[in-house]
Length: 96
Image 1 (spheres, one colour):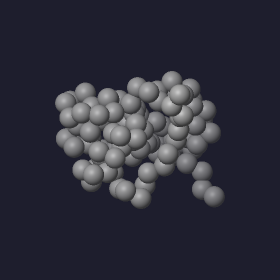
Image 2 (cartoon, one colour):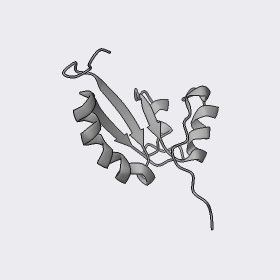
Image 3 (cartoon, helix red, strand yellow):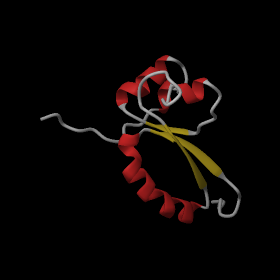
């Protein structure tokens, strides 16, 4: 296995606010263990204005990973901004 430490490798993540707390807690250990630097962009899960996740890749943002609500995710798949087979469900909550 080849190490990525000190390789200058980087990943750009585009994330909605609902997931930010756990995400930002995980970044330091991920970067330390892998040597991969994380760049973070953020936006609202749904909508089309400049403060949304859909707007950014639709207007040229190069992103490696997108983390957002299920509804917003399927909008991006339908718009062909995310490859359909690349989806991984992170959280499921039961409505009470």
